[in-house]
Image 1 (cartoon, rainbow, N blue to C red):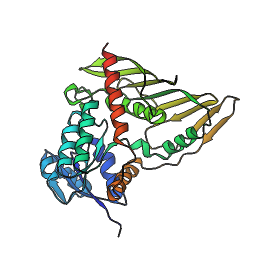
Image 2: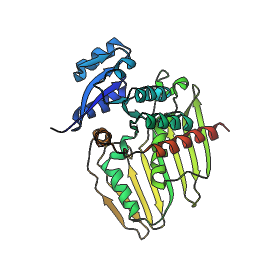
Image 3: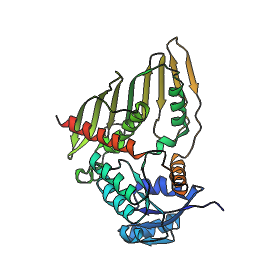
Image 4: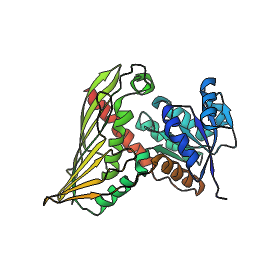
Length: 320
């Protein structure tokens, strides 16, 4: 029988209910073991929905369980560092929702704690495990559009609620941290560099960025634009312009079967088929495999630290 990582979940947030808990149940190398929540009603609902055999009325109680190997943290952004660090100090591996923390310094401190305690930490960018994301990387590595010169990426949706955690400044809300972090991650992954120049503009609601656009310039002359917000509906769209053509990816950050479109300079168009998947399941299986085989996860902390620093700088530039 294949060895499995025994998972605990800190909190019963929407992304946990809708995506990650079902992914843990489906993952071939994971076992759904326990959930911790400060609300008895949520715990009862979790048991009813997913059959949890162990429930804890505090996160600390779950972390004290010696039969838990790894935890998933879907808590509000401002709580990521605190509970990830506590988990590491209890010897637990951690898959933490994005963004990993609110500042680059916090990310660096987290990395030190996890290294000291010999446990693994990965930021939960599930889209990185989409078949289409892997196909995109292969196309760029093959230079089918020549040298990349510009990237545009957007992720936004319409959010009407004033009570949603996403628009709570004290809990680290804002559109850049919630949805704009995906374009930041994608651009950083493609270019594997930090920009030399950053500018940004935003609109504000309840003390957080409600919509934001950012312009990035890199030392090799490549430019990039990021657009995000809670102000309107939008396709998750990424366009990559090269010296020999362009690549267009629709619904860049969720499971889908939209083909990748390649537009060549001579007018030809290629449609690259993409298979559907459950990227959350693939994410859980990747992290579980890293734990079981004591290797680095696919999404490394150096990358997360760099991108967290860029988010921090973009928000700072948007204040100017």
